[in-house]
Picture 1 (spheres, rainbow, N blue to C red):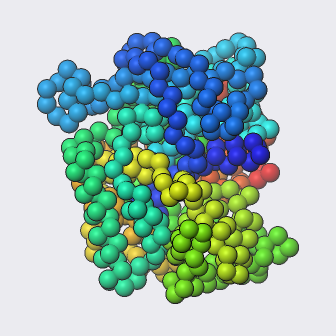
Picture 2 (picture 1 turned 120 degrees about the vertical axis):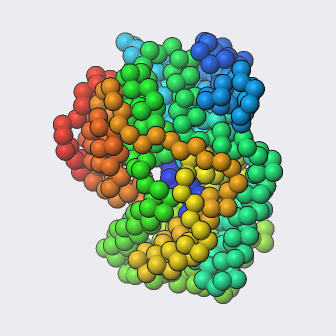
Length: 523
């Protein structure tokens, strides 16, 4: 059904800041589609071509009243070096950035373009623009927005259609996601270290010093080329999850070119790798506790009531001893169950699915466990992955200055097991990926957006992936941030309730900033 597919895929595109085992990521459901048209250099107008096939491939049809156009622009691979330079990583090279524009046939009083980033990093803005073009009845943007703006999605450098980085073998991703989220023995821990070393070596051998070029600041500079390409003097932007970091970086680099930024599911840029990992462990534990309370209060809809935590941990323990064999000979090992849990916590609607998946697993059927986990990882029925995780690691590890030692990670694994028993160990060992990553580092700025207009920062109190505490932190760092709070569950808020939608729409259309301290009820 279109509603289920479009909404679930759109939410998938708004997912996590930190991948619990392989660095930082978000789930992706959409296949890669070749939409590149003629390429235009940064600063020149691109050539747009009709591309309804993108929506048809993703959703099965185009959205009513929507026209889709695609283009590609060319940007320097290293904005610091420039295309005319003769030294440094990426000297004299360029990247291609893929764009999709969805424009309503009912558009009137056009304001400009609303540029979209779904987060990740690694999420496809092209895909997300398609999903969000389907209107509020199908989980997309309000008609008040699509009537006034072109919806423009872009795949950031290294992602999907934009000079994609691809260097991780599918077999290594299977091994990563299926691995025990809490490898307790030293032997099991060392094997996981070795797996991350193989992943890092494969990417380092292929891209060498160019890995540093995929960082957030470079992508933020690309975004200014996108702004120029769509013909807007100032940027209007909607960024989810990691997209809030990208938007905040843009605001620091180009404060005078900001019209309006909505940053939903805020990331605190000042948190290092260890602090952000612990912060997310805390967020997921809180979200799981909320799920457990719902389960106990709704036994008719939750077959693992009254103790959901015991049922989930019991399933993981059972899988350590005797994993259930699924279709195609695939074993439901602890990691797959763990990622089924993670996947379901991104929306409150996923809670019942999780309960049913664990109940069926207890009965010997792992089908729903695999369905949930694969929805998060983007694994298709043939065991293939997109380049989501390759791009995710390239961006996150280029951004990250902090590089904890294996010994420190091992200590944190034990410590966080006590504080955050289900998610803490996985968040700790997940730091091994960037710790073993071979590329250089290119940290993004973390300061005020001096000279920018008010920026709307949206946070959800029950958000597992970008815990709410990061919302006021990001707003305060920018100095011009205004906080909008949704007292709901799941990852990101707009456009899920009338209160949130009205506030964001008024800001995007009329630049009306919500009153200080506005809090929107759950539903």
